[in-house]
Length: 155
Image (tube, rainbow, N blue to C red):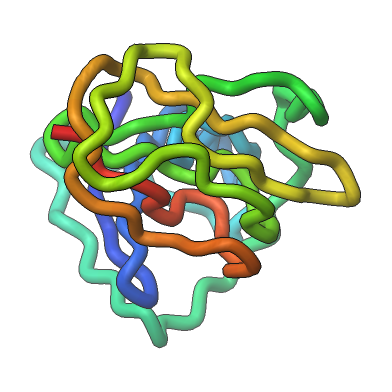
């Protein structure tokens, strides 16, 4: 059973896929990062058509998120997860922007460095996942960003 959702929390969009559910443990993928989530109480598997969840930015979630089952490699160039429809290059982890390597109007290629992000005292090159033209830059040097935050928009 796989259910896919798009949610917004504090203005940041997240793609969530809920996979297998076993008792109070659910396999969840958030912006491409896998997690095992423990939920208080047992989750019921929907029999037919699941209801769409309503999640607000102030909703309290009674769950404990464990470490990702696939570790994030520090200091490795990453193509950064992207939402296919939006054209946004998203932050793969929380950190501080050290450098924006492009400007609005630049033509860029897939794999080209667009931002340098400092996370856990490591510099991480964030690369474009597609060819295109920079439409909007949503961050600046010194900005703090959360995982999944839009960094630049490519058209």
